[in-house]
Length: 255
Image (tube, rainbow, N blue to C red; front, top):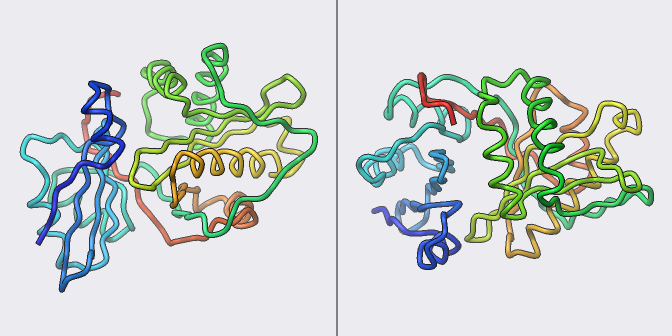
């Protein structure tokens, strides 16, 4: 049995005529227990957390007709299983999903963290372009400006500053129902010589902000090929939940 429901934040946004961050969620019950959950975002991304193979068919049947799903994010095997049923997809990011298990507690006396505003727009655009280039992501940079402005207007970017100079950024989104996500996280190359403490401080600050908004679960995805950053997230309370794949629909429109 499956249940289709609006996420709490999305329901509030829809009711007030705002553009919602998350449109709907699906829960699949198996033997009286939730065995699969999925959320669908405004950008056309389906995030799936399945626990039983039997849930796949119910999940797919619950997806409303006419929905364009450009991205599928799930544990590796599940991502491909769902994607094959939906159409033609290719690997975008191969990462490890981290969930915050303990209260983030990391600080540097020389670093000040703030919420970004419109005056930081160009900096965040430039750093997003640099982030895409460094990771060699298959992501179009044509709409970076639009998405950066969208997230800044909604208070979804945070900066680490050395004095008054921004040296790193982190995105943080709370879509409702207790789940918050962090990403991207980027620190200027010249400041990485201080180890990952700036990134750790900024990530912890972002996590605390999401918790203050109501997120009881905070997640992020880290590059599996970077063991140093993976270890850094664990030092501030994140636990590796295993390999996840982010798949993109082949030939999808540029966002």
